[in-house]
Length: 431
Ligand code: S3P
Image: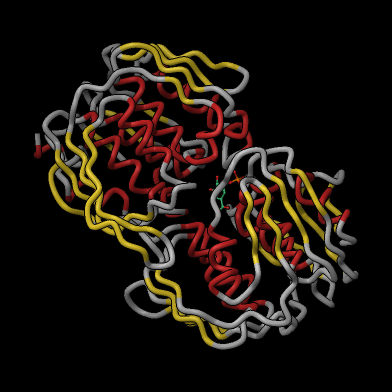
């Protein structure tokens, strides 16, 4: 994909459905009694991997037109033994959340994903699930493929070593099958979509600060899901709109769950002009976001806000490279174990564009405002690196190339179409 310096970006767009909510709608819809109608589902590769896994366990999932999905729930104890190993593709969320569900089943199962998944840490789910009584094994107790055999689960109280919603959710989902309540204590609040959806399905889930307790239900009752537009996908256009001079972009129906909205707060701290209109609640808070280009300045991103914007840090690094002054990102070591090592990837690629960026043990330091120039950018087979560098290319002088841009299909299949619809960078004649 070749990209060029961009003219101002203008327009109203809708970005795809939230990845986290889409995964959970299928998983919990499958375990519920009754039929779940999902609208706004993200038809990205990761969420299709979740559908594939549940179909292999006997759940009927119909994919309709216009981002609708219908899940025919089989109840908490209605999944069937799959005839083959489950394959979770590139999806960490599928792999970790499903491990919690599978720990409570009465059949053995094994699962793995692509080369990236086989390198991602699974010890963090193996340890607490074993404490609950699960018979779960992985390579060196740390990596996929995982094998899970039937066992009786009991409730535990577990303090998470990292603020991870995937880990929290894996334990809470196993907790559905335990004989006593399960409590998870997080170091800082992470996305709470699992808790919200479980409550909507009639399950008792109590949250007191960073302490979440799930009470094992006798059943879950199906409830339709409206998936908000994904703030993590919107973030690419928030940053693009902020850094391409004279841009104005409105993004409709974006999920602004307070455990996910850190990107808005940080961009506003950097001087971005963002307005939130039509705030409403549809199971998740949603609103329309409008961004107007403005001068940005450096900031510090650290502490409890990190889990609220973990997936947006690569594109925030692009914003920081365009801002006046220094931006320090700290407490973000988790970025190293995402689809790629996102600290190393962004430092390498932004440096290629001429930015002044230094890697640190748990983040990076970016001295912004250096002139950026086009280059051939690598994606590390990571969708968010590909889209972040595409946004960067909009403000680079000369031509840029994104190598392996197809990886955006993991979370945002028509990303480049939306970018060019706004007038951005993909068409040299637009200059
Ligand atoms: C997710 C949680 C986050 C995030 C991922 C989706 C989820 O991962 O990075 O893209 O849906 O629970 P961690 O829980 O590992 O931080």
